[in-house]
Amino acid sequence: MTRATGASTSLLITDVRLYGEGDPVDVRVVDGDIAEIGTGLAGADETVDGGGGVLLPGFVDLHTHLREPGREDTETIETGSAAAALGGYTAVFAMANTDPVADTAVLTDHVWRRGQAVGLVDVHPVGAVTVGLQGTQLAELGAMADGDAHVKMFSDDGKCVHDPLLMRRALEYARGLGVLIAQHAEEPRLTVGAIAHEGPNAARLGLAGWPRSAEESIVARDAILARDAGGRVHICHASTAGTVELLRWAKAQGIAITAEVTPHHLLLDDSRLATYDAVNKVNPPLREDSDCVALRAALAEGVIDCVATDHAPHAEQEKCCEFAAARPGMLGLQTALSVIAATMVADGALDWRGVARVMSERPAAIVGLPDQGRPIAVGEPANLTVVDPDATWTVDASALASRSANTPFDSMTLPARVVATVLRGRVTAIDGEVRAR
Image 1 (cartoon, one colour):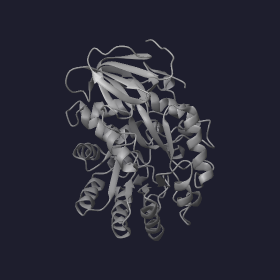
Image 2 (cartoon, rainbow, N blue to C red):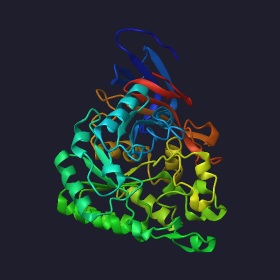
Image 3 (tube, rainbow, N blue to C red):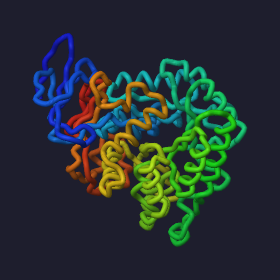
Image 4 (cartoon, rainbow, N blue to C red):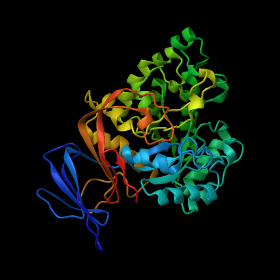
């Protein structure tokens, strides 16, 4: 790898197959944009050897928790950005359930500026829908949308906006502002004390059950509210086969509804709870294998639009405790691509162009990011990810970039690995190492 200096910056990515298709090519990037695609290209400030791997648009995560401000002991914008870059991401959306809650432009602008200062990925703050996530009064949606961060998505994630009138008002305001409301679909009166999917495994283990209807009732309600309000609603972390059918119905009616699925809900099921290891505790809970199958089919079909990690770091003491007392959530940024390769690519449900669709193009389109999820073509922004599709690696929780280690994939051997990540023509991660600005 070589580097030179000059008024113009250039990067050459050699020996890559665009979307995993055709013969290998070289891609020249100049001043942050793709300038040339061909073979035998030479001469650049820096060269990245793609090794015959797959070149994809940089990934976009609509759902991550970076914990700053307030819980910097578990994650910071810097450590979370490092994990994201190593996972192939060039943009992430940081949820509002920080301390204090990101329910004003002061807070959302702070998160945006911190992300830009770190410079490894674009950190887009998600604004809270309600003040303090309390579900009683709408937050300053307009001020956050008009601030330096230009907030594009609002969510009380971690809590459901359960008041239907308040949710309708939020959708109406969002329509006028041209922003998105993302709903944590959980009817709270159905999940009091619930800690595991309501089914045979929870009953056998003596764990209070979390019914599918808690999610599905809110998905159905919000689809109808979005229809009447003329707004857009996005369903966070869809987890049940019933949610898939409700999404299918709503889309057939022309309702402006989109949805995401997490990698862990595609791969893991509630049989893992037999050990009572709280690393497997998550909200919504791991469901049955039949739900995993339905979610994978829906993602391949497009009924579920995209993959989002719900990356949720927690301190060791918040996980190494009684299952009922543990905090819900799992790490996800560095393992997402590999889990999608294992669940969707290995059996042919998605090809690499399909991976680009669900991990880059659709999430960028859902929130309206003009420079992410773009085609790999001359003149387009160089937000790119190089993947080795033939690699395998064993997850080591202690070696991940996050400040926390709560991954259910620890010690698992997974396929495919991110080789390099490029943000606007600058290498942010390569060969497992982060590149500071």
